[in-house]
Image (cartoon, rainbow, N blue to C red; front, side, top):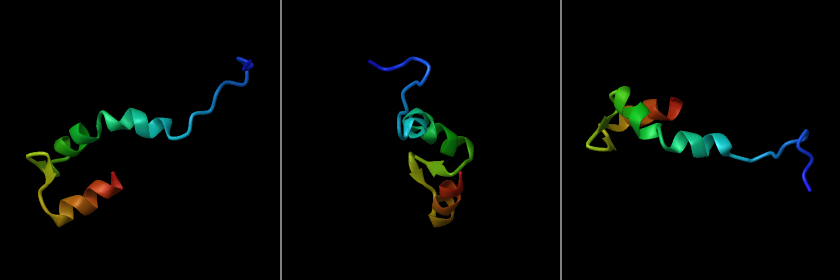
Length: 49
């Protein structure tokens, strides 16, 4: 049984949560066109976000 005070560590949980919003973020940053990066420069900028 897991002690509730200790909690449970879940690796990569942030990535799972971000997965649903990454395309929306890249669209709002104007890096995508038809769900693909506009060019190589946009790809490089997308890595830093």
